[in-house]
Structures are given as structure tokens and as C-alpha cells.
Image (cartoon, rainbow, N blue to C red):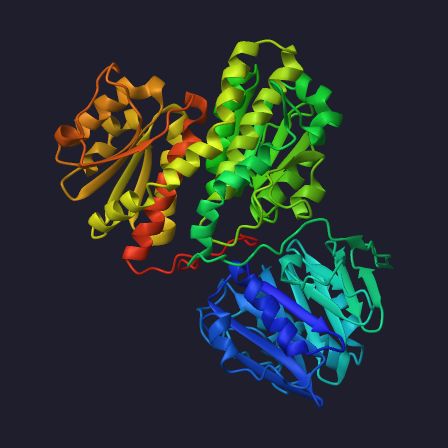
Length: 619
């Protein structure tokens, strides 16, 4: 989860690192710190809080050509100054920044305590530091070799960077499981290392994706050693293949707000070049089209918001094709003893960042079965995109807000198009009229979302009215059941409320006991096919004193069961009509806005909700 970054070169190291740290705050913001070398002295500055707070305590013009920095999401130890990174040895010789978890840190710590080492923090990082230091000092070997030896002792998923105050022209870094990338300036004199290439400045065009088990030494050149094979290895230098640089707020107050309003453009980008008349074109899947056609079972693996889009993917694929689909939480699936994945199965991993640790490890496990593994990601350069056999890039553009918005809608539209693409492989042009109807409405999605964004003031006023409510239920049927789960998740993430999502018909089987006049129920009611059943749900809730916030479609007076909002509905949010299968892409937008404005009214930090990070790279 944490973000690590380092710079070595002829420019201002402190400034370059602090700029990169700001970009990495999506990975954690419990604390921040950096360490640089000046005249053979380690200068350490760290504290709880965000990078902006740290900048007030740093000399951005410090005379240094080497610096390491860290933004933390706490795992081992509270979010405090003593646990903040970087960590340094007591003699101020070595400093380290680390992302990930050292699973055997407690046994290593006991061993090091027996040797006389004292620990000042609660972190596994300090254990790693002193393990390296022990080999470095006692065995009189170089730092590069000390890290190699330490790598053979540690267990877990991690990435780290170490520096030695007596060698201000050398960075040592290593990884296993957690992401790490090296950036090289065109002049060959300036180097960056970070958790994400997004942290690099625009000028960096050449990058190296560090592989698991690699130890890298950077000085006037780059060397790499693979501890798994005990061999020196060559490194593949690639050119940056994506554009990260649209990462400012563009006049919006929050990244999440900007990203909600970017959804019409993001969805258009996801569809661009992929719809040819009434056919879907997915070039990234063509090489495995026969295997997909022959497969009878698909397993979707994901976490959080991506899991909810995966549930919609299940509905789409099962509706439009002859395949059976299972959707699994990656965190549970990866540890299941019998995963029941066969060689001719298809497994799809969904992750916005492409770096979600549980998804990556689950995909590694299923690859052993010989099945085809696909990725659905927002980053063409991510770990998942390099691990999978093929996949789909959702083209959402960079998403900084911790609470995902446009990634969800783009994942959903891409999975819907995947379902139609699989249908083409199975039967050519069968169900042409059905496909025509869907793709006709697909073309209306962006304009329909724009219309919803135009009623943002109404949604803001509703959020004000319910800002003192602590209990929310979100209910939907069929395609809108996963949206109910997603709406509840957004309220939890941003407002720290008790919020639950349910299939509407399941209310009668227990959850309706929660309903009273202090409970607000958001009814997702814009699927025309479900209107009669959903209107019955509204009556059940209202008869028990519950407050109703209704997400409705623009009904005609001839519609059955027309409800007068003054009689049964406390708040009515009307969205444009659209075909049932696409209704969740519209219904989720007012839920995003409702959670966003609710957080604003409750004075929560929208872009940095407590205890969370954007990219979950640890268990």
C-alpha cells in the first residue's frame, strides 16, 4: 500500500523526491518522511500526516543528489512519528523505505534482539533494516551483497530501497511481490525508483519494471541480481507507454469530484474503436478467442469496487452467452485448497491499479492449472497486465480519488462489451436485434450521465437533509443489486456510516428489521423490468417508517404502479431511461454524488478517507 520513491542524480534530490511523494499519496497518507545525504550526514525528516505537512519542515533547496521518501499506510504499528519511514540505524549509517509486509519479522526480530539490537519502532521495516545492517557490518560486505543475503531470509511481499551515508552515489533496491519501477533520464545521469512510474516527472521516458527476487544497484550504471537463481541478470528497458500527466484537479475541489464528472468522457474512451456497427472489436482477446469459445466456465476474481463490477460481469456473460460464471473475492479464493479451476476454464482478474496483491497472488495460483488468465485493468504497464495471457484496458484515465468512481463504470461497460464479444464467438450474428438494442443505448450513456450530473445540486441538497443519519440501506434487483453494494461501499468509505447493500427481495429475510424512522433507504429503481417488484419494496419500507430516497427513471403516465412521490417517496432522483442491462451505469452516478456530498456535509476528507489507500498491495 505505501508509496516509496528515490532519486539519484545531478539535480535537486529533495525537491524531486517530495514532488514524487505527492503523487504517491494515493498509496497511503498516515505519515510521510524522507532522508537525504549531505556531506556524509543522513538528514531525516518524518511525521504523521500528509506530504503537504511535511513540506513545511523541509529545506527544498538542500544540497543533496540522493534522497529516499515514503508515504505510509500503516500495517505494523500505529500512524505515528516513531513508526513513520524512513527508518535509520542508530549510528545513522543506513536508511530504508519499504512497502509491503515482512511476514517472518517477529522471529527475525527475536534473533536480532538476542544479538543486542534495540528497536525504536513497531514496524517490520526496522527489522528488515537491521537484518541488512547485521550482514553489512558483521560480515564486512558491501550493501549490495548484504541485501542479497537478507533477501534469502525474509518472507512476504515487499519492495524497499536502502542507502548508505558513506556512499552518496548508490541506491540499492529490491522487491518481491510489491511493485517497483526504475526510471532513467535521457542523459543517463539521473535515476528514479518508485512504487509507480506515475511518481516520475514527465521527462522520464525509459523505465525498468523490477521483477520478483531482483536486487538492483544503481550508481553510474544499473546492475541486477536474481536471488532465486543466484545469477546476474540483464534488465529490459522499456519506453513509457501511457500518459499519466492529467492528474491535476482542473478547477475541482477534489480528485473524486473531478473523476465523477469525467465519466462521460471516460466511458466514451472505453468504447472508442471497440464498436464496429453492431459488432464488438476486442483486439486484445483475438489470439485466445477459440479458447474462450470452447470454455464452459469463467471465474472472475476481484476485490472491493472491482468485485462489484465483476458481479455485473457475471450477469452480462450469463445473460448473453452459454457460459457459467463464478465471482470470487480474491482474498478468499487464493487460499482455498480446492479452487476447482480446470485447464479449459477462463479466469478474469479485475483491478483498477493492476497491482492488487490478493488478485495477483490468486492469478498466479490459477495459472498453475494451465487455464487462460485474462486481466481487466486501468494500467497497461501493471503487474496484472504483464502476468495475464490477454486482457482489456478499461481506458478510464488516471484515478487518484481513493473511492473509485470512473473505474467502476468503465469496468462495467468493458465487461458488458466482453459479454457481447463472447456471444459473437459462440454464435456469430445470433441475437442481432438484441445486440442492436443494447448498442443503440450504449451510444446514449455519456449524454445520459451528463444529464445526471446536471442535477447535482438536487443530490447535494438531499445529502444535506440526511447528513445526521447514521444508518443507510441500499437496495436493488438484478443488474442493480451490485450497484446497491457499491453505493453502500461508497458511504462506508467516505462517511464512515453503517451502510449495507441488499438484493431488494432479501429485505424480508432479515434486514427489514433495521428499518425505522432513523433509517434512510436508497432504492435503485431505474430498471424498467423491475419496476413493479421494486415499487412493492418501497411500500414495505414505507409502512415501517423508513425514509425513501428513490433513484427512478423518467416514467410515463401510462406506466404501471406509478408512485406519487408525495405519498410514498421522500426524495425522488430521476435519471434518463435506458435498457435494463445498462441501468446500473446510470444508477451508480447519483449514488457516487450522494456519498461525495454526504462526506462534504460531514466535513470528511473526500480524497483521503481514514484507514484507506488507493492501491491495496498488501494482505
